[in-house]
Image 1 (tube, rainbow, N blue to C red):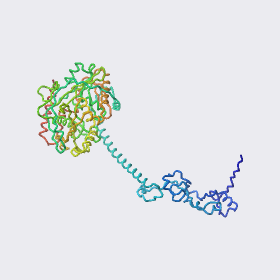
Image 2: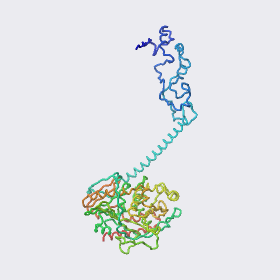
Image 3: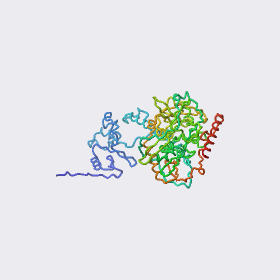
Image 4: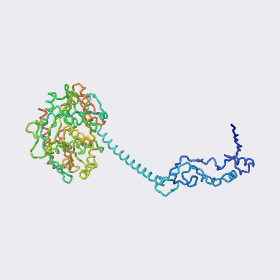
Length: 593
């Protein structure tokens, strides 16, 4: 194999600058000029430059070659996507390229490509708003304009959402921090913390229970007045006051539960309100507490006198801040008292007042003879938790109705509107036309309360749950209210709408019961942490929450009637105050007995 010799050629020396010497230089000899012209590559122009000039790229391989059909022939001056750019190169005819066989037309069209991006305008890409500017220089400009406008709109929307969420989060954080250090019960230094359970573990629990067994049905129910289903904001009804009282005693004080415990009907005893608080614990924000008593092999879940469970939370899951002052009519405490007062009267007003009452096996326990009791029934039901453990719960029903010649049980509850500026939705304007929006807002602001109502209806096996919408006559008048509308839901369907999983609810109860059954005999307190999503179990002395441990949060006189703010409705206020005094005296006599 024969290889041809490769001749490098003569490289002349240029003492005046960079590159080969100029052929027209008179200082150089004719031989050096001819050698320089001979060493030039054919058809490749050369432009002299100085050290201060910036070098560009001969070819730009990163330029997009899109839409080839609309592109001019490659190599032309108007081709925006050509790899080589010939037009900007100034040809120096003094090199004698024509003598070396070069094409003058092609050489004249050769130019360097500037790889730097074009300078952007000072106040944004103005070409996006001018679709006829430099149409040939940027291909597919119209599509890029559309995409650019979309991107700008997305950026503006994202910026607005970010600012909105930042403001909401700051408000939410301020509100939570304000209530972070207020627990529902004062933690005493001698209490011993045994367990700390975060809510994140509750979401993974699941337990399937069998159909419960009805043990006993006590009390009497009046019939529901169906005319209240036709109430609208334009045909509202005034909320009345009633003297009938509902005696909601705690678990261990219930005479029927004591009898069932002696008969060894179950191992665990509770009420529907206590079970609902446990089942919906992950949704709670405010602090609450339960008293757990282990007596032998029995377990009793109780509530304290004046506990937070006696009230109804308002705007608990909302991000809007509530006033912090306890005396403010829109504070969390005042609204809880007002909501409990509204629910008690609402459950009595929507009944047929003809004296007809459906009575059951036994009267309501813990009620003295001659006392007028409200329409209420207690259904004692038993669930099987495992082979050796049963749970008995006292479930509450408020009314009954005949549907298709069949008796149906109802639960009655009321949502209350105190000031539209806090919720952002005015019930008087939206309830008739946008009920779904109103309910969605309440699910956002009072998700825990609605979930507990649904859990109580499921535990009591109610056929229907009636939810009333009660509003103040005036935002600054917390004594007088009107009923704007009443909606009815089946508990199972409503539980599906609010994403309330029955298996998860029972999984939470089963885990708490298993944990408490491992404890020794004594008294314990389960407290929801006011600032963190978790519950804690404390071991407390046997005489806790007796005379030496009276808690301050909820005086009885405030549970019946909120503090009077104005002179309006003075007569009604005095009547309610007298009823409050009677209630306090009756309670004191019961305690002494």
